[in-house]
Image (cartoon, rainbow, N blue to C red):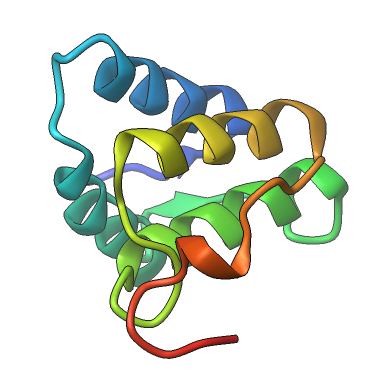
Length: 99
């Protein structure tokens, strides 16, 4: 990527929708999340509630082993958190290590 891309919650909601419609496997969000957090070309407004939702979700996706598993159920919950800010992810949704 040669230019910068501003990531919004809506972009990540579209990815959730692709998972929920069967067009994308939930486990593929790991690579997408990793690319978002590790690339210098993806940005978000970190000091806003919307930007915090992007960051939290991208980091969660990038490391499901230590954050939340990537399943249809957790993707529904990620989608809700992205849209509303309300976190319905639970202790049972965690990957390996418990928060």
